[in-house]
Length: 87
Length: 333
Image (cartoon, rainbow over all chains, first blue to last red; front, side):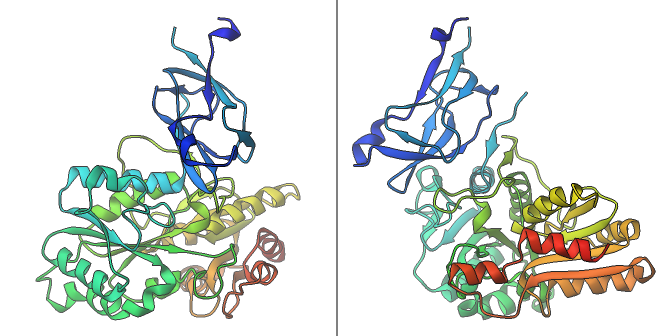
């Protein structure tokens, strides 16, 4: 399976309309690399402007790489992690 | 298979939600628990599923709503009532100490009081003397209440299931620093794998979080993690410390503590609550009662008998630290 088959977990969503800041921080990961995740399941908590937001898994599959660890900062739209979809 | 991990706050919410789904008599009441989701996220997301009838914001009168919870429990419901900070217990002392704790006894078992009083405890974040106390001993001292203090997400969920199903009053004290909040980051440790299905952890069973032969460190709550950090550092010096997490103060698992001291001969008790008339004295005297001949050396590490300071440097000074625990374990070698 090539790298291109992976799906990005992106720091984006409807919540971005409610915040003015572009930057946030990763607060908690609820999955470690290698774990099976289910589409829609909350796998990560981020904080923007002191508001906590849950980031869901985009597809069913395996969380293969965490790009932004806990306490790392990010900009809205950044890739936080990669999921390899179930084949 | 790699497990899902949860913060302690999410593990608590999951246990509450499971119990509310299983039993219509379970409901939650407290200040800022509905729309806000609990100021330490103890009820985050529950309002959306259960609505205002079962996740109830209350007026700022602890006497009124804790009394209401006692009455509802006596009538057969299973209320969970949250005291926002344990420090506020004083304004409802009669409802807690004389009604919740004693009504089963006073009525000759005519009524039982199957309620859970949840409350946030602990310092380390500059919230000063009226919002930083642990007060474990205050609640464990008076007969009639079970007292639970989880240190990890796994324990928090299993102990809370057990608390809600208990037919007698339970005080469930969660440490703010362990909840996993963005604005109050937890140390490494309290976020653990948590099964999605329900499970219970019985009361009165301490958990040996680390086995060791050279000293017995007895503690609970936040200081389980500080003791584990201390044990890791001491291991590099060749000192092998055992760390016992009491998990419940009432009932108290004296057997596990005494068994450990009979093995190590050395006892260090670590408590975030005040030093005098509290947990450290209770554990030391329990061991002295049952196993005095095994007890070669003893140390107490606790909050000195002073109001907890606001200034960060001063609070850090009085709060038992990892370094304080290391020094105490070295002292008993």
